[in-house]
Length: 233
Image (cartoon, rainbow, N blue to C red):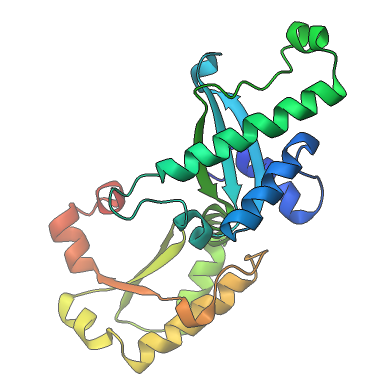
């Protein structure tokens, strides 16, 4: 789950909205993860890497970015191997019991309904990060233009939103220094946040932690060849 267009994100969003539920067989695992690691699991998704049956994988979709952080190894910045193994083991126990209880083994084999836990790769994503991107990028361009018009500042060149953030571009580096952390900058923070809340369906953006980034057209032209692709690369 990386983009707002991913089917995994869309299915998890429906769970968050209360439109659908996590798969019945994964509910016990989600509850176990929440209790053991003090997190909130929204969804659990099982598939095979490159559709190869010998490479099963399990996506644990947590709600918050801070929850995902609990499964990272601070030394290597990779997933915590111990926790991956713990969840893989628990997944094998729970799904094995579910399959024995609910489906005859011959039906499982024919329809491919068994969950393979051997060599299972467990990885973690969070819903909040993608939802914040969706909220920010849902703001129509015309509303950005209207905001710039209301601000009515001749020293402001452009307002550009990307991913989960926004950058206000002044014309020069000198103007950038003038506005950085100024009272005007604080006003811009508030104005953009107010606009953003109209599209933040789940309220993930918090005013005290929201920050409008400032940059300059001079920097954009001189160091990024006036190219948005280079700027955000």
